[in-house]
Length: 316
Image (cartoon, rainbow, N blue to C red; front, side, top):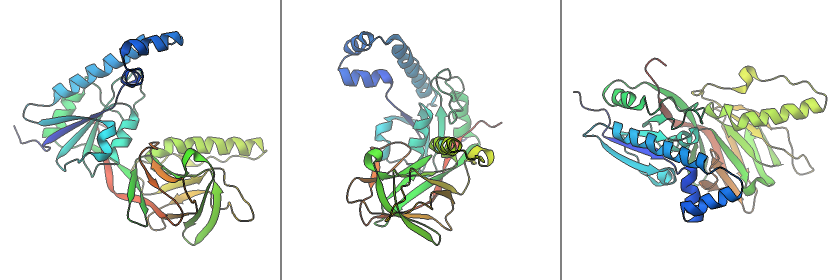
């Protein structure tokens, strides 16, 4: 047998709904009592938890003898040091893939769908039944992977944050944010409920809701909507990002002409905070993992040098 391409297998998972309930109510019995008193089914949660544990067990058993493996919870990912010879397996929903990928530096992700009947799994091509064969192929054969462009937010003080799907730049709790926006030779001061910056992978997520809301307003005002090409969906490896300003407010001191568009690293998007406090930048919906963005701070949005590498089946 040839030597494996990777020395370690890092399995990333997240707590189930049952785990969260037990953490909240201290015991499983108390969690059951609370839900049943509220007229909700506890059996569904138990079944989902058991299925998740079974899939996780199969994944751990699929790691060949002689290959080191480690199981970590999603909450530890931002602080975990991944080695260059690590192969990462995620067991959870699509969001687990995006929230793991942005902390990697090229290590491939083999994403397992723990419950295909429950999760669509756009980013989850493998199941408990296929993971063993695919793991063996990835360890000892040729790597088949899809590249995904990540976005990068870099503050003027050098702090950086990556995004798999999208960034939110604005004020905490999404209240009114004040900042100066600049792209190319255009710039203006704005007040809005924040800016969304989406990658190709994220163009099917939060950005679609922005499009839907904008289209609804235009039609309600009697206008005609011309949808973007392919519904606004971009290839995952595209080298451009899309920004959209949410609810810009024009006034004597603020403008609303730079509200939507695409940009590349040749003309990155730059934003300077004018918020005395509560300014934030977070990615992929994880508000707990953020950069402070208060008065004087400037952020440059661009595509990252590193790409996310999602393992795919050989015939994909």
